[in-house]
Image 1 (cartoon, one colour):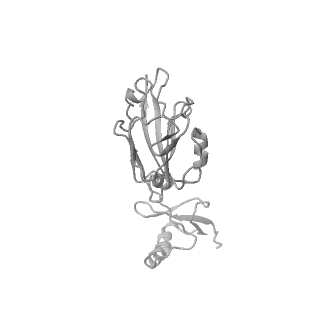
Image 2 (cartoon, helix red, strand yellow; image 1 turned 120 degrees about the vertical axis):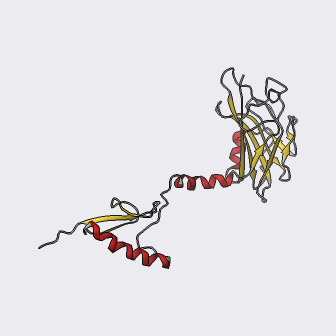
Image 3 (cartoon, rainbow, N blue to C red; image 1 turned 90 degrees about the vertical axis):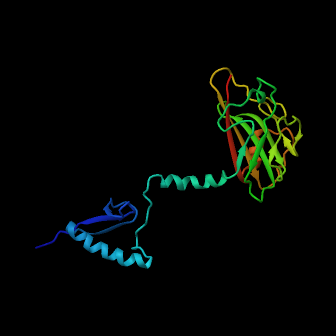
Length: 233
């Protein structure tokens, strides 16, 4: 009697119980072989896997894939987490909290105090930028070439070409230095404070804009830290 031969693919993956299960032929790590009665497959496949595993080997053409929920997302986010190891905080503003009026156009409109830690040892300078993400990245503050030994900024930094050993640029109000949040009346806006640790100093004159600073930093950012705060009127 003529035996009809068919091809069927099997895929080895790491489930909770580590079982072998069928998968389409295009799946990575599949093995095609003549069709046999279903009850015979465990007897044919498992002895080979048991023999290879103690030797640290895997069958040719097999690829181990982590099928646990969230495994792929964790792999994708790893590089970002490494870049975000540096921390930026403010003793006057809590994370995702409302900015006190003193630091906005509703008050004295002075810059808030900031602190940071965890910068790479090879840092040559810092750059800081404050932008309103709900207003097309309206820039409220940009300062760069802060010394690598610096780990904080005091409240009420003077507006001008130079401050705290760094160089200040123009904000979207077209003034030098800090210009506090001043959103239209309505929903609160989100303000993103971003600190960059750079591998060199930026060759930019005072009064440069945020676009010029971002372009000059491209490819030379060692680490960054962010703090988000809100303000509404």
